[in-house]
Image 1 (cartoon, rainbow, N blue to C red):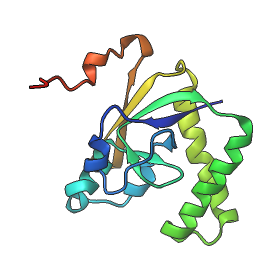
Image 2 (image 1 turned 180 degrees about the vertical axis):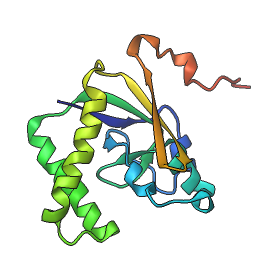
Image 3 (image 1 turned 180 degrees about the horizontal axis):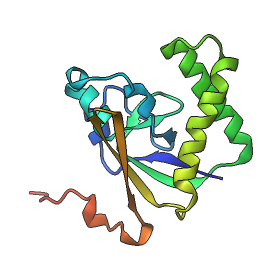
Image 4 (image 1 turned 45 degrees about the vertical axis):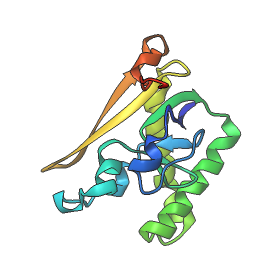
Amino acid sequence: MKLARAIHFDESDQRVYAVPARTGEWCISGGFEFSNWTEGDLTGKARQAFANGWFGLETGGRATFVAVTTLEPAELETLTDLLAAHFVTFYGAPSAEAAHPVAAEEITHMADLCEDHDPNTLLTVARELTPAGVREAYRVIKPDDAGLDQFAIHGSLE
């Protein structure tokens, strides 16, 4: 099974998200956070999290880039438990047991998104509000296509 981990090429996530995901943290789309948002909610750092942020399963933070990697079977249950607990703490789910199937579905959605991609493939997410709800689109950057010049900040030492 494959899933994705947060990856950082610079410090920008530290500045643009209220809570940044930590490097190496397992991530999912996390679009559920925005299911009842309106245009009025899209301000400041919350807007950036909505527009481009993957959801870190350990911190609840956001990351702009994730990299596809292999998930060990033993890790799946731990991640599902973490997300179920998040649903109880932040969304009022009645219990971790009740939230577990929804958490498993969210992680399965991300695993399905990652499944056909090679390890180290980079993914980005872009969201928009529509009359029908939140629409997500994903960009795939294959390892062979990810040149350093796409991410490097060029400047002078003088």
